[in-house]
Image 1 (cartoon, helix red, strand yellow):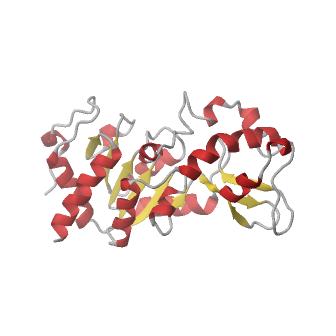
Image 2: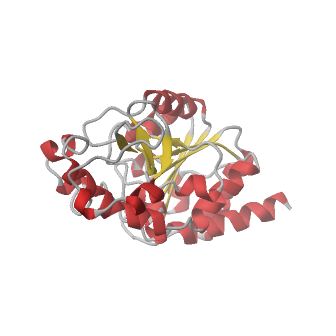
Length: 270
């Protein structure tokens, strides 16, 4: 039987504190779940060298005024400024062990759905088949006319700084290309959001990995899961507003925690 929160003696004020008992229970819950769902945030990718673009104090999006954000796709100089800021970091980044472990858990049919707030495309590169990308994917450009998708690396490499006053154009139809990302204030992709809510409500185990749960509406997904009876586990290196609603909170570096959880899962399966 799953032990209560008090019996685990969690110290939610202490960063980096988790116990082997908590690792074992997380692994056990995953293996025995019927429909485990994972929600990931920026914290899973920081160990791949990608900053949190949505951080309230240091993130690129937060350093832009609402008017600048809305001008991203009309003011081409602002557009290329943003692309030069985030493009190289995302292009150079590689999936870390946590991304790869989640992909393995999906392949093992232990994790049934993966939802991510990240725009770095690292889950896809790690082998996750169909991550629900709530905030888009900065590894792709999308044509506003024919809706074709193109690798961001190729578009960025072909661009010349003296052309900053021009938008990138579609190699197929000549239409304007935009980064496939959701800006603050914009609605999430309807299909991805509807499916994320459905998967959350269907889950019997909902695990938050590397998210501060500060960005709406993604931070509502754990509440949908809880409403329908799911257990909530939070793996993050800092507190969240939903820590007191979680069955367990594992505070620490994401890669370290996930490696330990995966090792325990392999023991159980073998």
